[in-house]
Image (tube, rainbow over all chains, first blue to last red; front, side, top):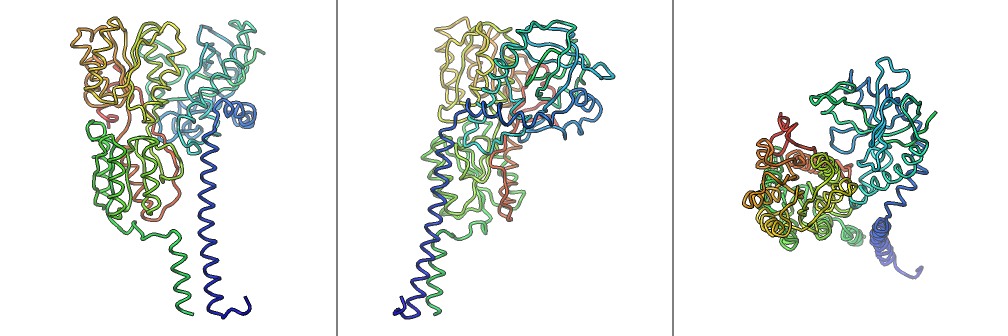
Amino acid sequence: MEKLKTPAKWILTGLGLALLLCVSIRLEKSDQRRARMKTFQFDAADYARDFWDIGLPEVLSQSLEARTLIRLFNTDMNAAIEQGQTLGESRVHAYLLKGSGTIVTMDKKGIAVRLDESESGATVRILTGPFISGNAIRDASGLVNVSDFSDTMKFNRISSHINKIVVTEVIKPFLETSPEIGQQVTFFGAAEVAEDATEQTPFGSKDKHGKAHLLSIVPIRLVRN
Amino acid sequence: MFPVLVLFALLITGCGKKENPQASKKIAVVISTLNNPWFVVLKDAAKERAEELGYEAIVFDSQNSTGTEAGHFDTIIDGKYAAVLFNPTDSEGSIASVKQAKEAGIPTFCMDREISTSDVAISQILSDNYSGCVALGEYFVEKLDGKGTYVELLGLLGANPTKNRSEGFHSVVDNYPELKMVAKQTADFDRTKAMEVMESILQAHPDINAVFCGNDAMAMGAYRALVIAGKDNAVQVFGFDGARDVIEKIQEGKIAATGMQFPKRMARMAAEYADEYIKGKRDFPQKVPVAVELVNVENIDKYKAYGRQE
C-alpha cells in the first residue's frame, strides 16, 4: 500500500467504503428477512400463553375500579374514553377492571354482581358462559401492538387463544366452587365498551326492550371470598 | 483529486438513492376492482381527498388480477408518482408490487385490505374485519336463537378480508352445536356469482334458516336467489360492507344485518398520510384497524350507505 500513489489510494479507499455501504444495505435486508421468518413461525397459542403468564400479571395493577368506570361513563364519557385503550380508529374502548361485590343473579352466560362501595348500587355482569369471544383482554392490556404482526389474522388468533385460557383456567374453576346468589366475589377482568350503546342507554338503565344495560366483564381472576 | 471525489460520490449514490419521486404532484389510486360499488366509493373518496390536498390523482383498476396490478405499478414507477393509495388484490400476491415501488422510492399506503408483511408499505389502514364479524356472529346467534342450518358464502380466497371475516364469524358461531353449516362456498365477492352459487345450494338444501355472506354484493346476490326460490321470508341474510342496497334492504326488513365499514374514512386517511409523508413526516403506524360497526333494524337510523349519519 505504501508504494501506491496517493490517487490510487483514494480510489481504493473510496471503493472499499462504497462496498461496505452496499454490504450494509444487504445485511439490513437479510435482517428483515430473518424477522419475517421469525414471524412466519409465529404460534398464537404460545403467544397467548406467554401473554397470560408473564405480560398480563404485570399490568393488572393498573386496573380501574369497575364502579369508577361506570360512574365516568354515565357522567363524563370523554374522561371515561381517556382511561381506556382504543384499537386504531374505533368507538369501542377496552379497560382492565377490578372490583368486588355480591352475586345478585346467575344464568348460563354470567353472573350479575352488585359492586361494593358503590353509592348507586352499580351492578356488573361477569361472563361465565361456556365460551368467550371478542378482544377485551388483548386490547385492554395495551401489550399487543397490531403493527408488530405481518398479518392481522395472527393478531386476531391471539384473542381466540386468550379466550380459551379464560374458559379453562378462570371460569371452569370458579363454577366448580358452586357459586350462589348472595355470595361475595372478587375479580380482575377486562371489558369493551361501545360509545353508542352507552350514549343511548347509560349503565344501569333499561333499554327499549326493558333489558338492563350492564357493564360486561371478561374475568381474568375470579374468586369467591 | 476532484475526479476521485466525483467517482466516490457516484459510487455511494449508486447504492440505493433514487431520484426523488416526492417532487411529483401525481398520486396513484390503485383499486382491486371497480366492478363493485363499495370499491367505487373507496376510489372516489381517495381521489377526491388527494385532489383537495393539491395532487393530480390518477385511478387504476386492477380488475382483481395481480398481473394487471403489477402492470399498474410498472406504470406508476416509470411515471415517478409521488405516492400510491393502494387497495391490494391479494394479501400475498400484491407484496412484490409494493416492494418494487418502495425500492423506487415511491411510498404505498394500503386502504381497507392488507398485504401480509409489515415492512414494505408505509402504513396500512384496514377494516377490522375480524372484530366486525365477531359482532355479526353474536347477532347471528341471537337472531337464530342458537340453532338451525346455514350457508356461508366466502369472498376471494386469496384476500385477507375473506379469512378474517370467516374466522371472526366462526369464533362465535362454532360454539353453538345446534347451529349447523350445510354449505360453504366461494362467490368471489361477486353478486352474480353469489346468486348462481346460492341457487345451486338451495337445490341441495332448501330448508336453510340463514346465509352469512362475506360482503354485501354477495348478500344481494344470495337475497335475489332466495326471492326467485320464494324463500326470502324464511331465510335470514347477513352481509358485510354497509353498501347502499343492503342498507335499504335492512330498512325494509329484508336483510337482517351487515357490518358497516367506512371506505370514505379509510380513503381520506390514506390520502392525508400520503400528503404528510410527501411533506416529510416519516413516523406512521404500520397497521391502523378501523372498526366495523354492526348495523341492523334496531340501529339503522344511525347509518346511511357507507357510513354513519352526520
